[in-house]
Length: 160
Image: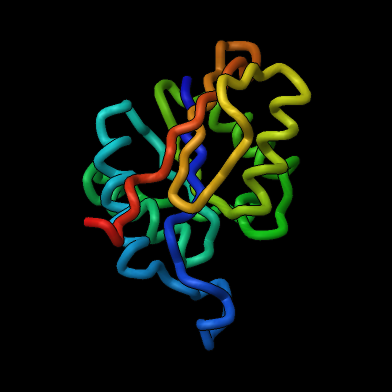
């Protein structure tokens, strides 16, 4: 089983958004990134999509959900401030999926999750980085999370 851990696409800055941070949407650049993420993951056998309930995370997975005809489920364990332990608990539940799952979270949860995995059973091919729109592919070998590799975010959408 493979788990794809996606950091939400570009959503602009907190300081330029007037509403509650949970409702901050993707920018045009972020929407293009989410389309590219969907293109990259649509053929890997995904059976579940799980997201932080924050708008920018759900919107990051929406194009993939539409393509695969899968709902984007919300889970508070992926919310900002939830922490790596909560995200790992969800990952361990998803390890029972028959094929692949995608989760989308934030820049505070993802590094905590990756550090926990690295400190335990997981071999990392790449340095720990997590820019917006990036993905980590983490493999479950039937007993543990055994390896992880980094997938860079889509090319800068402003250059398209």
